[in-house]
Length: 243
Image (cartoon, rainbow, N blue to C red):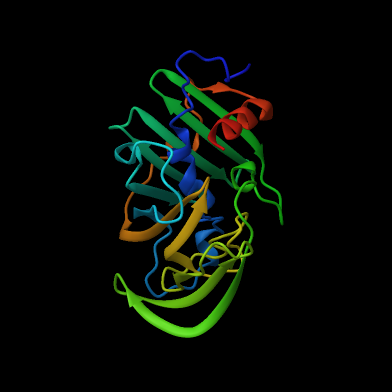
């Protein structure tokens, strides 16, 4: 299956949808019984606002099409990270299912629905992170409050010196064990509430806007029947279109 000759060019807008997948906010949750918490719940969601910094490079896509919000839902070790554009006509989701030890990428554009799966392996990142620029993280002694949570502050620096350093605000008051496992942010031992990501030349400032305890359906972590499974070559075609 090749995407390059698709007359609809269905993936031409997916760059804006893929971007936040490189931020590493996708939590690798341990069981709730392992948690010792201050502000504790092991089922709910976090909403993030996305702000774009176009000073580094002009956007390739219509700025009005770029998603402005990302939502992460979590329950019983499992997480789903989802972003949408154009009132839901475009969506990209990333699922980590700990029971199945699988990661899933779901892409929807109009009536086209595809998914790719791969195993979750220790000290290994899913394909969604393969194209993220390398960076180093230095923890500091700074502590600041954000959304009512006491946050430690770390400084991340991309190995490419053209990119500026950025701060990471992360809290241990939402005491989820190993919250950033299987992501490039795995050294951060807290839930990240404020940080920056760069992907496909787009610089984004990501800030949590709400943290809520809520019931999450088990269906959130299951591939819908209408999605068609595709292989790695199709995913690589998508990524190539976005370069």
